[in-house]
Amino acid sequence: MKQRSILKGAPNIDNIMSKTHHAPTSGSVSPMVGDLQRQLSSMSGNSITLPVLGRNVSFKLETIPANKVEIATMVWLGNERDQELLDEAALADLVPSFLTSGQQNPAFARRTSGIIEVADGSRRRKTAIITGCDYRVLVGELDDEQMQWLSQVGNDYRPTSAYERGKKYQRRLNDFDGNVKALAEAEGVDRNIITRCISTAGLPKDIIAIFQHPGELSARAGHDLFKVYQENKQAMLDAAQQLLRMKKKGEKFEPTRIIQALQDFISTNADDTQKNEKRYGDGVVAKYKGNYVTLKLDNRKIPSDLMKKLEALLEGELGKGNRDINTCY
Image (cartoon, rainbow, N blue to C red; front, side, top):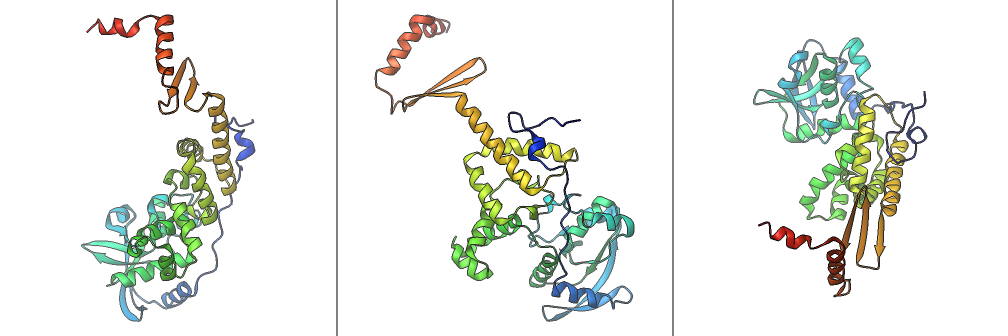
């Protein structure tokens, strides 16, 4: 049966959205991750000593019961991955293996005020919560610099998105007095990429959440979409809410189709707005909606006697409404 479009007034959703989605394949393991995995393979018992930024750290393997993962652990605040965007769809590369054989590689963390603070392994943590699996963590005494390095190691294997990097760049800009060029030099990243990431980070999270995972929206595409959003904020948010409802019902969309649907909705909405508005010169706009007509007059642009003429016309045609109202008080 042909599916009805949910974007009212927009092109048919069947012509916009793809019916299939293929989860992105993981890239090859980075040298840093590969080195850690090789050292972990030689682990015997529940303890191991590993070099982290040139300093040996003794780690103890701890297993957190499934029903305590969410309250006994937290993600280190310096981790740039947006935890709110981690759902079953975004973790499609991990969920099946967790369900069949549990967590394969332990996370890295430290203990702070009795809570296990995770540097590398936030995706595995959320997967353990979603699947109801135990969570395995290597806990050691780590400083902030080492936590940052371990976090980067994990993100080197599964890179963070342009949206998430943009959020980091937004925060770091304060350290460079808003100078993008200086930030780019410090990060070793082209400043055009930083600008695009920051633009992408300016999109509401409801729009990012439509994608299977935030990495599906590139910095270039996010930058272009942000420019459209700035001129059509409410229309794009309305479209995003409808697409999110479809996603919650099980629909899976290709990234290019999501972007096209958002743009098509805005284009259609703009066309409808034009049909429902009529301009009289430079200072008068009439808006028609259902049984109502709204006149918007700019006193700076209309002739000085026009308002008096309109008031006289309304009073002559409809009676002295204001006087009648005033006599009631």
